[in-house]
Structure formats: structure tokens, C-alpha cells
Length: 202
Image (tube, rainbow, N blue to C red; front, side):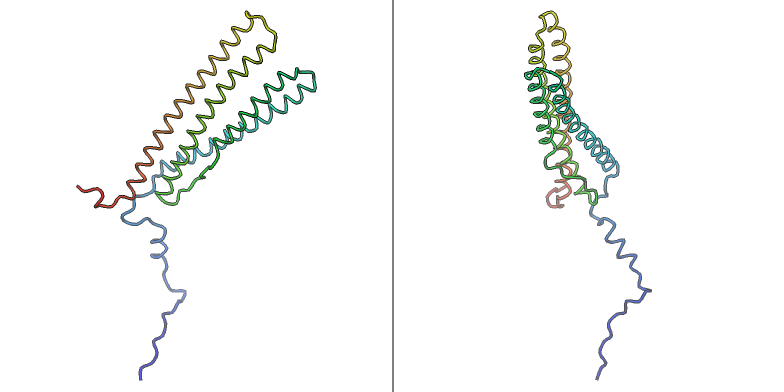
């Protein structure tokens, strides 16, 4: 009659180092995480959140100033135009940040998905900037008309304002192109991670 087999002990002398390393390190067939890309993602994420907070704070501040200005005697037409522009800018800014994917950097796939989501958010931000700039042109025209200025006074102000906003639109469109290129490049890299040797014969 044989004695029952005793289960392996789990004494404090057991060495879990190799198992821990196996969980922490990528597989041999998985590429390492791109440290430079992770740093760029973290920097862009910080700047995007800072910019978003400043835009929201600025829109709320404009609305507050308009309430104060009406109380001080500002014509209701001018206040309504300013409030409408500020509300439009706030709504479009919130739209540009909808579905923020956050930042995940634990695997190469997560890094690339975060990069794609970040570029997509940047693309929407650029489109929002174009829309706000166009609305700003209309707001400027309305304010100059309400101000009862002479044509000689309106033209220089309108030219400078519209010219500056046109430059902003060019900046936003360029940013949108860059974001689309980043989305395409990161998507191609993500798809390459999932390719098998039979998918890419030599």
C-alpha cells in the first residue's frame, strides 16, 4: 500500500522571481513598449487637458463678464451676441473632448490605441477651432455693426480681426492634417502587431 502523495509546500523559501518577471516582461514575440512614444503621449495628454481647462474657464469667464456688463448698461444686443458666441464655443469645445480615451501604457497595443484616440481627439479639437474661428468672424461683424461705428472705423478693425482669425483657421487645418497622419500611422502599426507570419510571407 502506497502512502498518499504529499502536496508541494509553499514555504517562504519558494522563489517567485521568475514567475513575476514572466508576467511583467513582454513575450519574446511581442515588441517592447516605445518609451519615446509614451513620453510624447504623456506630454500631449497634459497639454490637451491644460488647454481644455483654460478654454472652459475662458468661456465661463466671458459669460460672467457679459452678465456684469449688462448690469452696468451694456446694450442687450451686444450682450446676447457675446453670450451666444461664448455658449457656442463651450459646446463645441465639450464636443471635441467627448469620448476621451484616457492614457494606457501597459502594453504596446494599449500605447498605440491611446495614441490613436489622442490623435482623434486632437482632430476634433482642430475642427472645433475652425468652427469657433468662423463664428468669431460673425461675432466681430455683429459687434462692429452694433457699435454704430463709421465705415472708416470699422474697416481696419474688421480687417485685423478677420485676418487674425484666418491665420488661426490655417493653424487648425494644419493641426487636423497632422492628427490624421498620426492616426493613419498608429493604426498601421497596431495592425502590424496582430499580423501572423503567414499573413506577411517573405
